[in-house]
Image (cartoon, rainbow, N blue to C red):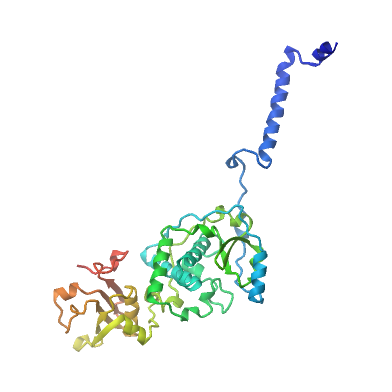
Length: 383
């Protein structure tokens, strides 16, 4: 009978343990195959992660050299590059690790890149700032903000950020535009990010065609700017975990617009006489006499609306190459001393002072912190 024949093919009660083992083994194999197939539900964290490539094979950072194509041809070619959204990740917040002096120089390097690359536009500036910070975290680039911004700037062409080698720094933005860029740069050094551009390390406008365009992945578009990352591991979050230096050396190319860089390099500012007039309403020089010969003092009425950092630039410009120079400035004209004699009220109202004494190896700039807030208390006048 069929029933009997069927019963003969079934396992007996004694054979069940062996059959159960076989069935469980098959189920386990099927489960592994299902989890490894597309759409499997195994937690990705349980799977082995790809190991980082050896440090010595970090990708090469190529100079930004442009193909000789017309703008319309560049736009067409750039539009054909696919936009890669898979694996897109926003950058983690960044906090600058250095002290106040290094932070100030880093801020001005970042602000210069943001302003001269994107103009006086906050959204464009933030995207540029994010690329700079992404680079400083990546092992393929230098480890300080200023070194990243000015990488390759010693070359006439082929620098990483074109404003550092094409003469753009000779053009001046208004003090207000520079101050806005500084404020935004300070915020980016304190943790704000631009999630629109993710982990992009490269960008260019859509009317040019860098030679490296086809070797990278286009991951974001912001107005006329295209943003790129490296393919593979070097474009993933794991690659952006390098130690960042808190040491930002002064940059001579920034001395004309950043008093912090000029002061650190002991360079005279490139302020023109017309610009001095906008920062100083009145300047009175009192030459030293007798034993104090050569110890000049400048009494200056300052422009109240000028950025406080510009007072350093003004002092360097007016002191020139003098081995000794004492600069004292007031924004309140009624409290600026009319003679060399100064009472306590006038001294307390002083807005800024600068003293250079090469013989003693001393140079110091101080602000009235009741009038101008400073991050570092060492920059405040004593009361």
